Length: 216
Image 1 (cartoon, rainbow, N blue to C red):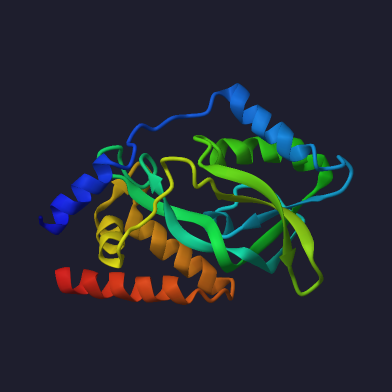
Image 2 (cartoon, rainbow, N blue to C red):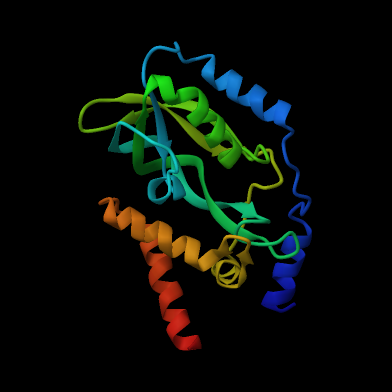
């Protein structure tokens, strides 16, 4: 079996149906998350990937933060934005174990309803994430922030990839938002500009750039 055949088998078994949440299901998820907010205080949101370089919402403050118990990983199939149902790409999710350096954003209390509604449309189209309130350490003290972590029970969750398979998927996948490689590079650049060091991601970026030079 060739590497290409192996990937085709992997895609076929990945559950290629892209299931969107209904508006009612998405609203119910948001309501459940906001039940833990008192409605008066500003609200923190944790970002670890594209939210760092493309938050798309107004915030009063942002701080570098450390989240323990989860790590940043290319563990989510992307069947629209960075791939297709037939050849899905990979995007970052928060998977259990380890720790993750990211950013927390403080959203003004009066902006929470419309900001979180828009954020849920962006982050929760298919229910692949579980919104959770998690403690995030910052230089100014710990804050409790909303974070989107992987739901390991969804077929969008990626498990068991070899390193070579991951690299090949990233290099080949392309979706409505552009290539998977571009997404990985943009995320790595945003982390670097924010002063966040991710050893595994930086190693992957070096490999992708080297392979691109070789192919060119």
